[in-house]
Length: 104
Image 1 (tube, rainbow, N blue to C red):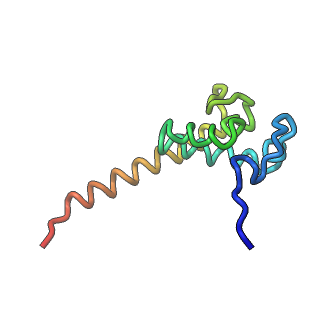
Image 2 (tube, rainbow, N blue to C red):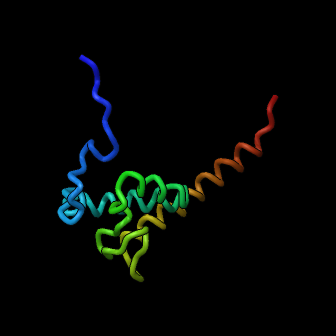
């Protein structure tokens, strides 16, 4: 049997954004943290990817503002920023260790 080609957004989106199962679901806060952490680590390119598949996924589950924007004191953003800072620090430390090694 031949595989059907899946068009964009056909995979799970019902295209009823105001009643989105993902945005209304329990896992949306976790998705917000994960996507914001990716944005903190990899930058604006993450925004482009998320926008391509679902513009609503840039909305914060708590703030209800899109485009990876938040109100002051948002705990989901704070967690994403904490992770991003730790990730960048670990990457820098790993790079410095590699530079310090001498090849034989």
